[in-house]
Amino acid sequence: MAFGQYWDETLAELADYPAKPEVELLPIRCTDFATMHSVRLTSIGPYRLFGYLSIPVGAGPFPAIYYTPKYQSVLEPIPQGSANFLRSRFVVFALAGRGQRLSDSPYSAGFPGHLTVGISDAKSYIFRGVVADGVRGLEYLLTRTEVDMERVVAIGNDIALATAALHGGATHVICQPALFVDALAKAARTGDYPLEEINDYLNLYPERRRAVSDTLSYFDMSGFAHHVKARTLLMASAPGGSLDADAMSAVSGTIQGDVDVYESQSSSYKDGLHQEEWLAREFGFADAILPEHWR
Image 1 (spheres, rainbow, N blue to C red):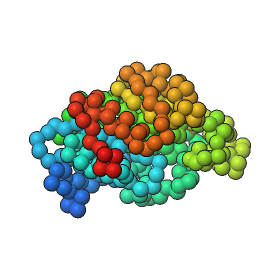
Image 2 (tube, rainbow, N blue to C red):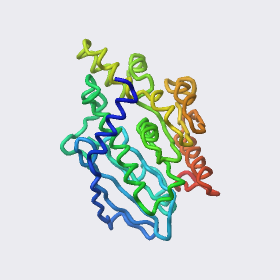
Image 3 (cartoon, helix red, strand yellow):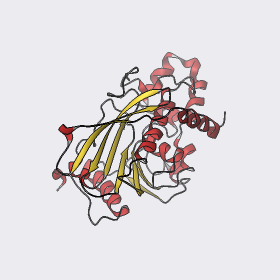
């Protein structure tokens, strides 16, 4: 099956399941500058998902940040260490993909282990569902009247870029690939997780290598890249790393929208500052909202 057909069929299946959002106010997470809500959505499967939706107090519409599903167990309303005051400027939606906590019924992901669930069959691979979850979250965010449709950024790992490729609603993307850039070859050259999960799996099932390769071909970021028209910031690893600017050239070179590639300075402060200042400039703000410990 061709790459495009695989994802066309996935999106068609997703469309068969209405989102059926349930939204509930979370008073304990509300502030004088933003309200917080829990959101439950239906994705492919059907599978019920959980997300946090923060809406600034005041008259909108507001620019929006969509934190796509991450490769970690716990869902954060905003990333740990970020300034909570982001919620005064942006509609913020953070979604737990299937298997993450709060979206862990009936499937509770193990870390490590999540990356290879169903990997020998492209139709049953868990990340087919996770990518569909990412798309469903963006679809829902764009139904919110509080959102300025001209300023919507998807932020995350590979799922952010895949979501932008499959749904044109994101105007901007900030992506730090970690999983699906020539994954099989990179796994063979590392002992680090999460890619080491692929090595662990193939050590157990060496006869499935061809099937695993076929599955991963549908998730490689180079396949999604030429469908991305959003303004994109790619967060690469430090020079010489396995995902540095050169290693990601097959991705950055085919994205249809304007692309900036930033190579990590091996500093969460410097890397985070670059990301926040880039987003502020792109959305027309004079300054970035930074956490207190960065000032």
